Structure formats: C-alpha cells, structure tokens
Image (cartoon, rainbow, N blue to C red):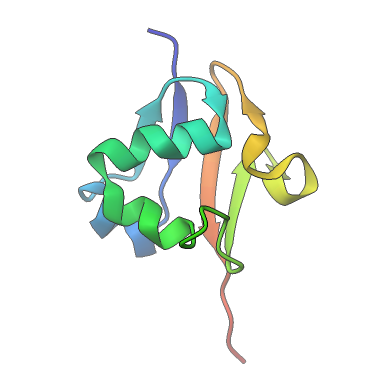
Length: 92
C-alpha cells in the first residue's frame, strides 16, 4: 500500500494512541484527516473546528510548506510525503 506519514507533536500524542507518527493513504489534507478521524477522532477534533475548518492555532505542513500558503485542506498529499501537525505556541 502506498502511504504518507503524519507526524504528531508531543502535545497531541495522547489523542493519537501515544504515537509520534501515523500512516494514511495519499489524498487531500482533508481526506488524510478524515482517515485519521476513523481511528483517532479526538485528535482531529483538536485540529478542526465545528465547521470542518482548520483551527486558527493549528498549522499543518506538507513537506516544509504550510497548507495555509497552498490550497488549505484541499492541498494534495502524494505518496511518500510527510505531513507535520504543529500547534502554534504562544507566550511571552
């Protein structure tokens, strides 16, 4: 099976069964998240709001590029690519 890797930050690993990485089939970012939601619904609830949009303080990168700078959740993820979830950090 062809797949992609989704890297999970430490702050969200508890919602991903304690895993640092998950695997999914290629597709759009929205489709990848939908796949993850089938086995880790609480993880995806922390990434998307009630309307299904990316929460303001969550960044998702495909390779090194933030999907907000591409096509958002419609960004295509191809086989072998790495998707990184990165919550914004605030403080001062």
